Structure formats: C-alpha cells, structure tokens
Amino acid sequence: MEITAGALMEIRINPADVGKRVSVRRVEAGPEGAAHLTDTVGVLVSWTGGVLLITKKNGDTVRIAESSLVAGKVVPPAPARRRGPAATFEELAPVLARAWQPVESERLGGWTLRAAGGFTRRANSVLPLGDPGIPVAEALARVTAWYAERGLTPYVQAATGAVGTQEALCAQLAERGWVREVSADVRIAALAPVADVAADVAQVVLSRGCDEEWLRLYGRTTDPEAALRVLSAGPSVWFASVPGRAIGRLVVDGRWAGFAAVEVAPEHRRQGLATAVMAALARQALAEGASAAWLQVETDNTRARALYDGLGFTVHHAYHHYRAPQRADRSAAGS
Image 1 (cartoon, one colour):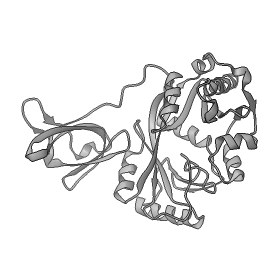
Image 2 (tube, helix red, strand yellow; image 1 turned 180 degrees about the vertical axis):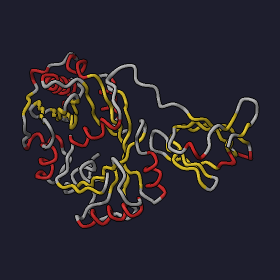
Image 3 (cartoon, helix red, strand yellow; image 1 turned 90 degrees about the vertical axis):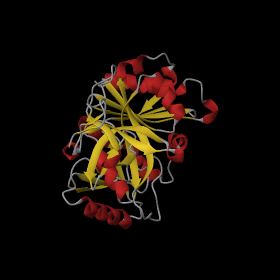
Image 4 (cartoon, one colour; image 1 turned 120 degrees about the vertical axis):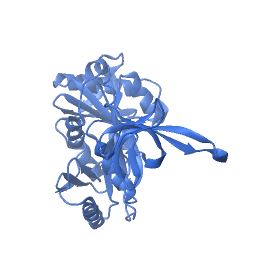
C-alpha cells in the first residue's frame, strides 16, 4: 500500500516492512478538536487489524491507527558513532552475559533462564538471544513456572536501539501485561583514553578477589555467597579498591573490557576516586590485550552518566527488565 497524502507527504510503508526501522507521521486530535501532527521513529514490530505497533529506541511501544497516518517511510539504522569501537549487538550481547553469570541456568531454545538467589536482575532473568523454539506465550509460561519453583519473580531482559535488538519481543511482552520495571544503557568506548585519563591510580589496589569491605561498599546484596559467585565469575575478573573509599570491577573478555560496580562512599565523592578506579582497571585490561570498553548504567543515574560521558562512553543500545504480571514472593534487586 502506498498512499499519497498531499504533495510532500507519502505513506511509503506497508505490512511487508515489519521488522524494519521506520519513521511515521500521524494526525492526532488535540484540545477542543484541534488537530496536530506527531512523528514516531522506531522498529515496526507489527501491522495487523489496521493498527501499527512501533517500538522506539527507549523501549516504549506506540500503537498507531493506520487511518491516522499521513506519512511513513523506511529509514536506515542510526548512523554509526564517530568515535569509539565498532560493535554489533550480536557480538556484544554474549560478552555482557559472560561478565555477569548466574549461579544456575537452563536453556529454552535460544533463551537462557538465569537464577542467582535474587542477586541482581541481570543474573535472575531470561536472556533471549534467539528463538525459544516454541510459541512465545508457551515460552513465557515455562519461564514463569521455572522462576516460581525457585521463589523468584520472573523477569525477561530485552534490548532495543541497535540493529538486531529485540523490539518485537518488547512489544509482545507489553501486550501480555509484562511490566517494564528497569531500563539501562549499554555504553561503549575506546579503552586507551580511559587508561590515559589523569588520575591518581597509585592509590588503587587490584585483586582477583573481593573482601567484606568491598561488598559493604557495593551494598546491593543480602546474600554474600550468591553475590560472590556472580561477581567472581567471568573470563578474567579483577576487583579494584581504594580501601574504605571506592571500589570497581573489571571483566576482560578478548578485545572487550567490561566495567561494573564502580562505587564511591558518599563522604568521599567528588575527589576523583571513581576516575582513578576506572583508569587503573583500564590499564590492567590494556595489559591483557583489550582495546574496547563497555559498561551498563541505569537511565536515571545522572551522576554516573556524567562520569562516563567525560570518559568518552557513548550509548550502544538499551536494555530493559520486564516483570511478569503476577509477582512472586521474592524479587531481584539491582540492574
């Protein structure tokens, strides 16, 4: 279907474009009947019954009546960043998963069900990096039962905003009543500039393990045993500490260096400690042959986002944790 709506506006999309990134303009009724135009850019995840579903980069899914369209076209993927490493979602997603491993996991086709006694949503959620091999509704029922057996709230972690991410799954989860509870950005950067930043790295102690003081500063667990098992797992794991003041964690995996758990005690903030921790860990990663960096930061963590902006990190994609409609007795804390 291609409909001309005026000389400058055309609808150049149709149901065959499901799965593509599109830009559409629709007319909406405003106050007192006044009409206005609204633009939406995102992945067209379905077009049925006269309704389009478009999932935007931030994970929001918009329902648009076909009859309200005045223009629409397929648009190319977002332009590549002018700095930092090139990376596809297909390459990066398994790297992120290996850096935050659960205590227990089970495969369901291309989905991985993960559990770690409730320590963080990342280690207690489904990672859907392929087809589950059964209808999604049936897969979600299996997921719900699996987590219920472990006394955990069912979560699915799904990504948006890059080529190959899971906008269609996000829309399906929302349609089935799953609640988007937490969103975070995955950011990437060249590693060398992080290592070269001016900082007092001599005060940073690196170790292959973490102690009670490190966990106290991390402050996100009521189950130290489960936390240690998750935090210590990965291809090459390092813990950083400025004793009593700041901590950080690094996982080196091939060319990638993943940063996590960068925390500074409140009374010691604004002293450059987080930057020193990042620089010390980056130098260790360079020594092991890494060249690219990644990290995850929740979208509402403005303090951390400012730090990472200054170190050259840019957004690669977003991920979201969707919670099942019926909550179990226990839930996972942290992203």
